[in-house]
Length: 149
Image 1 (cartoon, rainbow, N blue to C red):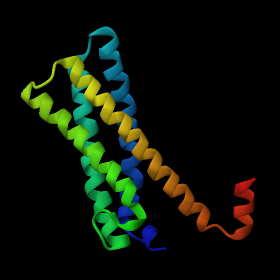
Image 2 (cartoon, rainbow, N blue to C red; image 1 turned 180 degrees about the horizontal axis):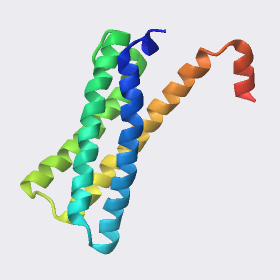
Image 3 (spheres, rainbow, N blue to C red; image 1 turned 60 degrees about the vertical axis):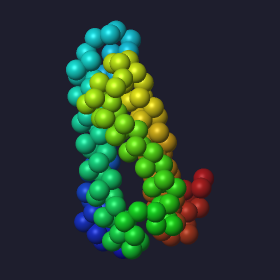
Image 4 (cartoon, rainbow, N blue to C red; image 1 turned 45 degrees about the vertical axis):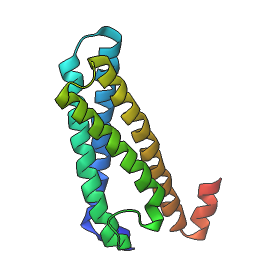
């Protein structure tokens, strides 16, 4: 199968869980700041790191999509996932701009990060559902019956 034959599949397989781990730590730090008012620098740094992971996975994911489907973005097989990814990127980028320009107060920044993270969770779920469906589709028919039970 072409999607597994490209080395970009492995890159995505490494970056996706790493990004999720960074997200989990960052979510803890962001909520911690909102609850206690402490740790703003750590929360901000964690969102920046999460955003860098997001950019890396988006660039490598676009290359993967080009190799597998012939388009860098919005291939029919991943159209809606890519649409939501653009919103995730827009929100994370808005955070970076607001952080760099002091356009928002610290709490507002954290709420923007939470909005970006909420959309990220939706996007991650889209990809997990798509990945599971692809795996089930390529199982022998007997294995499909077992998976359905």
